[in-house]
Image (tube, rainbow, N blue to C red; front, top):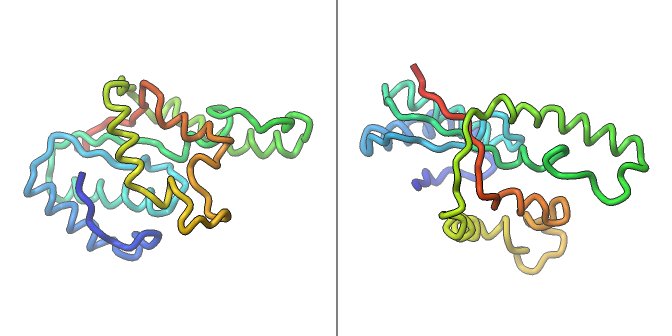
Length: 171
């Protein structure tokens, strides 16, 4: 795993720098595989990372296989059920279905599944490195952490024994 140390939440503002950094890594390391967040992720930084990695692979002429992985796309119906009592509120159902329909693209957008049960402990440890996602900073109860989403079910989705990927090469 390599970090290019660009400002969180502002990756789009550093496009050329990001592409250049990734291209340099590709040229130096010559990887056979590159992992990047899925192109349809909701966070802008995730979409930007995907775009910049694909650009760098294309510019470098790398033959690396790209593996896109969804993160936040799992945080919706039908992957997670509706909250307790939501079925009694038509607008809540409509909102969940509307949001969930775009997430159904994972069924066609991801073209392979990988058994990952042997590395779940390492995955947990890696996620723990993202303290701002796992721990309330300074005990601030208004700071959302991953276990807050969908009553903890979202975090459970991240630790399933299989992961879906969109796997491809850039021609």
